[in-house]
Amino acid sequence: MLTCKDASQLMSQSLDRRLGLFEKVGLRLHLIICHSCQIAYRQLDFMHQLCKRIAAGSEDITSLQPGLSAEAQERILKELRRKQGEQLASGD
Image (cartoon, rainbow, N blue to C red; front, side, top):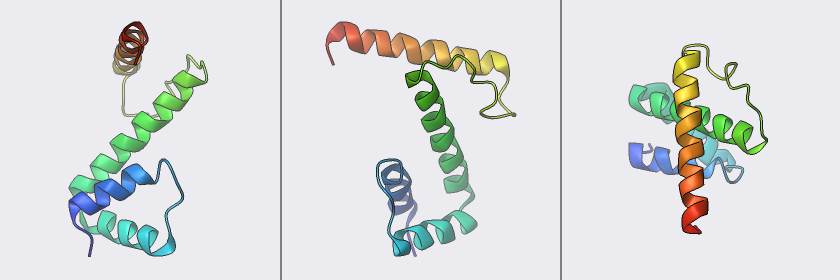
């Protein structure tokens, strides 16, 4: 059985590569029993989708997560843009 640390690493890796069969099964089983990791996975997926839309130049982020208010989504978008501007300014 995966630990929460192992599960979080697999969640992150799944954004960069396709997980193997045993990795997928192990992660899914862990997510079934671990509420904290379920929440973390939803948050990670939301942020990943949001960043993809920002990178594509989409201004419409309201359809990403119905439970998040338009105001909260706008705050997140502004903060991400601010951070992106800081990174560009510092040359990272």
